[in-house]
Figure (cartoon, rainbow, N blue to C red):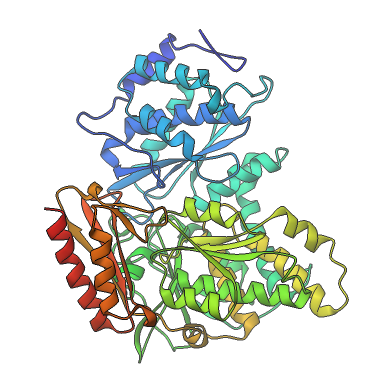
Length: 557
């Protein structure tokens, strides 16, 4: 027996040994835990997901909290799947646990698994051993609509079972729903686990109506807005379908690409990732008059972008546009309350954010803008430095985090006018509507619609707030992309020596004073180096990209 906290953990038991044997790893494959957890061809993930179940059990006992196992491959095709841990806070797995997750996922057999778990439990830096033996913490499991999801959920359940860990299987849910359930199960431990899913929906509806009305009772408001939504034939359909009925009279939602039964159409020529990257309308989408708002979410409903497709052609309203809309609205409410100097409001983007948005936020809104590496975990942690932190990637994944200080200050604010009362209610409602730990396509969609309504904007006005600089992303296949290393925020490269000087010389030709910039970074998932360039006109962008491709080929033979 190995004593894990105060709980007997028998690595020699027949249950542990038999279940390990039932979930072997594929030969010749190495797995690495990243921002998306483990994500690859679903046929290779059974053994990995079993081991993630064990990891989740260990994490639950370490934290003394419920944690989650989320089975999804987001915007990928249906043949892929993925598995990741949701921490007790509702955030992603803490970064210092990721190397252990990678090691455990590659542990070949029961003996190797047992040895790794013993080592992690003996390491004081990992914080294992603090749990109360009388507490019963569960691993909460959910999956998206992929055919492989049910089998992988079973593997995660077996991983928990092998070490005697209690579980709860939520079945098919969106990624943000599971994050909500994990977080709130720990914040409100008296609430029964099955009741958390309807609580999620109820909170969205109540917060949306309070935000619109500026009233605690959420009195009836008809925005008269019509929104056509591409559901990517994914799990978001299951949330939006009943929500559409319950919001009738407040907002008119029309749903497209809602076939969750046919795996072949999941994210196929539709979904936020495809629309944002290819800048084309989703398959099967019906355009009505230009006043109808058009939005698209991804396969697990944690990203959303808007778009227009009218006489002016296809135009995207991506995460950069959403972050600007949120910043304008939140700043307006803080100004009504006179709290602009008492609370810090900041924006967090990546190097892929369009320079037009960054200049507008800094120059017109006079807000701080920070740049982080790609990956929402980096943006989220930086956003926590502010009292109110707004973060988005251009792909439509993001949210707003409100600190406890903000909630306490607003809750105790002495209002002197009806406008101040409404501003307090609206900011508190926004904190409920927007997911505090992860992007939620549906909550974000409702927030966008509330902001447009309350600011009196249509999509044309929103689009015109600032002009996107023409930009282009290119992938260059090279023998060893890892030879390219960058500074923390990925805007400058460190190696190979001399490469950054060549990039700087190229950009200088295209007038950085008008917004020209470019950078390179190695891909974390493909054997390529990515180039990003933007400038005042498309021809300059093409010129920069062509010259930078030549530099990569020259310096990375």
